[in-house]
Length: 315
Image (cartoon, rainbow, N blue to C red):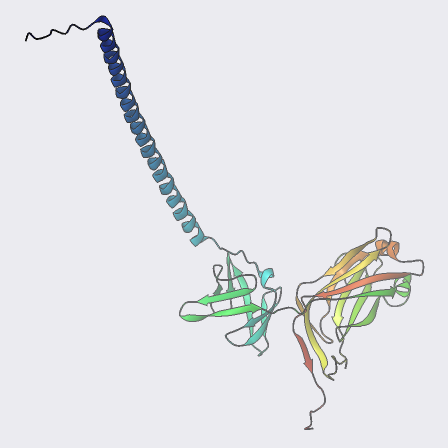
């Protein structure tokens, strides 16, 4: 039997051409997509490498800055402390004794020992070769160091709060200019007998009697005042003192004296100002009856030193 010869018609030929064209287009598109994916991957890789490079630079820069800061910190005090910052009462844990530091750098221990604190350049030195550590100290805790010896630790004596009293004082005799130029006004507070000494002076920081300024001083009186149910007398008290006067016209208090933390001994030194206020200004503040309102505030009340004069018998 003779073989049949197949002759494609035009429609089949056309369909084959379409399929071939579609295949070619798809292949081209796929090739284009693959190339685009490769390009994007290469771009992302390049961006990642650039970010890693920048991050490395940032890390190196941060390490350099931290190293520079550490170098500066070794030569710079972490805590700037001046002599006025350590004025007050501290407890030395090494000797279990209290120490009172004065504004002039004197250190008086309750065991009778006395030392001085001085400023040498930026360093604060304690007599005996100890230097205040700025890295280990704080406002409430001082660490004194010396090569070859154990450091000394001072902790701030916890204050007992504050007390305040308002006094109406008759200034008629003082302002009259007759008689004595200095007068003492006594009052009681926190179980202590206290006093304000007011005096007419000749001028700023002058102790001479005159009619220009008012000197204001605060002190502790020797007495037999008892504290609570105890018959003990108050020998000394450590605190800060502020004395103010009331300005009726402006409705505000005017400060006359403000001390640092000081130790007031009964019958001992009084502290204050020779020129608390001018007498001309004082005369503007007094009432027609020549009275003025003063306010005395005790803050940072620390150690109160008591004693008993009578012998204690068994009972």
